[in-house]
Length: 168
Image (cartoon, rainbow, N blue to C red):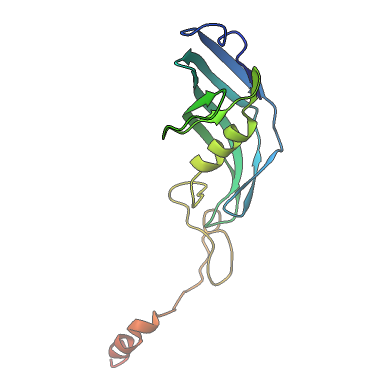
């Protein structure tokens, strides 16, 4: 994904709009040790404006990422929509503002977009909010099968209290 600033670098105050669709399907993004697969084209819409020697870029990013549910281990698709803002400059400045240096008229924003996607994903992916997960006894997916397993595990901290129930 590449942005071309040649048109807006000519004079200050010029604003350009862009709409990019990049087919990075099956591109692997690593997030928290998890390999994520992008399963739809990534769309990036936004604008870039030149002011005071800076290029302010506003992005709206849309993508679908294949994830694995942390409770039931089933695959599902998570849709991501992100609004981001970046500032590009031609040369380094000493101010405290975050910016990226662009050399030439074109900037590759692929890594920025993939980083934004990874940063906006949920830390604990769930296929649905009320996912029941796996049965701790038989290992079956409780979302699709109602197993009759009985889980009689007692928290070791409550073990002494369970003796009170045995006195019948």
